[in-house]
Length: 502
Image (tube, rainbow, N blue to C red; front, side, top):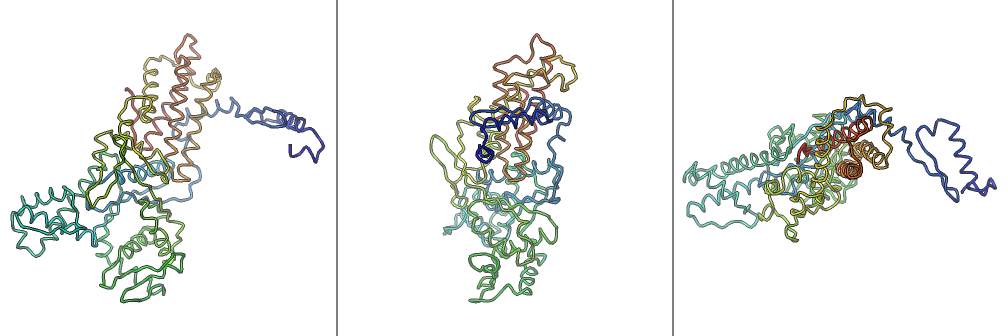
């Protein structure tokens, strides 16, 4: 239609000429072309190409989805990293599911991925944890205490205090290092609880990095000295500042406060310096809560000050989770002990449903978790919908006695609309998977799996897989067998089990 005026021809004639040209080449081996008035040219992927790709997928299996050109060799994903000051809540669960799923996806595609948990075991919050525990310990001994407003108020603190009472009786009252003992005990118990939750959630870490080690190894002090040598620090109001505004931050940041104590920012700079300059990661992905939005630019600015390319750091800000129970939203606060623990959610709906729903939406979207829906064994439950598709196929395969060789000539028998739609949805999984790696968005996996499951159910409800035509039956067996493989693979990449029976 654009060419009609300069060529003085009818748009429909131009479109038909183009179609004729394509028919004389090998272009139509892969695509079908249809011309529509007043001059539209529509391209359709040819059945031959679909069958060729289906055969390739069945033969290559996992290799079919691999990336050929991986640029970033060594990758670190740091996620969860919850302060050991209380149990994991469902907000931590979303970060855990996203981080672990990304690690699974990128590892599968060929990246060398290191999963890391950063333990914030230094600073004021840890002191307050020790103090809160010691005060509850005193309370159990009948001593009247005044509990600080910013203390940790959860029942888990009382449980830890009881363990201390059983171990020490009243001896801690006479010990100068009582708060330190309370802190060490509380930190150990809470971290064990966190690791137990992660184990039940099918999340593993390769490295646990203690913030306190940065001080013990003088990395914080050394990093600040390096920044001083480069001329990016200055003293003001009896504090030491870093000139982050030189690198795009909206204001300069304090490194050492007036009382001589280091800020969290100081240790975070040293931690990221350790990642890039000591451990030589090509790329680092930090997964933080969305409330850390203002922290991103200052960290990137500090990297630039250390002559580290800040583009090597990718920070994913995970939006908040709302739990919907009886149409009411529940918000959370660790310090006020107003939250739903991750273990409670897992107990309520199971690991599969929890992991799936946590990655079912973009990282940038708020997530509402409908407990009652996820407990249903119905097609309205997206996890059940996909797992049932896999179980349905496994039931069919048990009844099959097909021993044909699956090849292109056999798959040529697949011509029904539902069969072609199922093949297309399954082959699109590769694009979704690669987009996951490119955009760091695991929700694309769930989107693809739901599409494949939908097409499988539609096909199954309209056509018999095993029928009186032996060759057609085997062609369909080859098709659903490949679908089962892709469904199981996709579910495994987000840490969900593929069910054989339901």
